[in-house]
Amino acid sequence: MRVIRRVKEMVKAAERWRRRGATIGFVPTMGALHEGHLSLIRAARREHDVVVVSVFVNPLQFGPTEDFARYPRDLPRDARLAASEGTDVVFAPEASEMYPAGCCTRVEVEGLSHRLEGAMRPGHFRGVTTVVATLFHIVQPTTAYFGQKDYQQAAIIKRMVQDLRLPVRVRVLPTIRELDGLAMSSRHASLSQTERRQAGVLFRALTSAEDAIHDGERDPHRLRRRISRLIQQQPRLRVQAIAIVDAVTLEPVKALTGRVAILVAARLGRTRLIDNLLVDVT
Ligand code: PAF
Image (cartoon, rainbow, N blue to C red; front, side, top):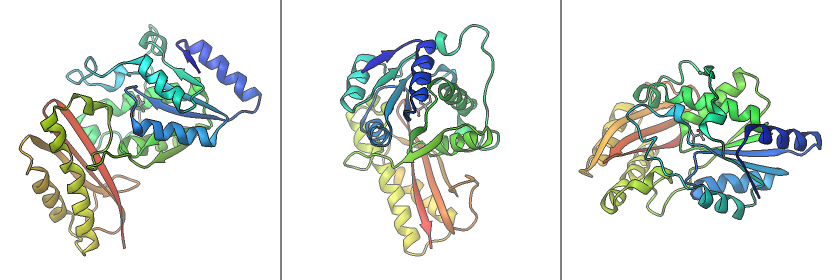
């Protein structure tokens, strides 16, 4: 396995593979790889000739008061883990490579990027779509893999690919969870033991809402109150958002019907937790 740090070198490698007719599976990450990322890498490995994993903590998607400086960084560990799953190339550029002096173009998916998570983190999704579009041009993947845990992010990237006719297939794979249901995330490394124990309530609240829907609940307000009540049983958790939205448009639903996504965001100490569940309401 090779670690490539230069954009030019990555473009050359991708062009060489493409000329030979090889397919490229691509897993974009910000590093601090965990089982969720590894499941994406395994899928890319099964489905493609070449696997590229990018490791880049993208400054554009962090707000001025967010955890950019604290975000975990350990490239040797990430490279080892990626190699153990059969990755061919880890692409780990410096910020100055991705955004050289004078670079001022941004990619933005309007509407979808400003709702929910986007309303709480202004500019976040513009940073994500800018870096993902740039990475797609550099790595030239056949398929790019994302986790369902970042549900809104995946919906926005799909929209961007569709609108810009980017020649890449987007695959969104199920969230990988800890034993207590907590969705795996690189940010959880910063939770204390007590916080970690409390964090599991997020998934329990989501599954309780799913059970209520299966038992006939159709009122989104009552469901939101139920989720909020459950989460607040853990004293350190602060609910930031609970939304019940159409699974494709991410518009809030007035009545529960069809495929809906239940999205939750909460703060636990200095860590922000997000999770979601897709439910088919029959
Ligand atoms: O999900 C992430 O880790 C990041 O938002 C991504 C897609 C790698 C872009 O920086």
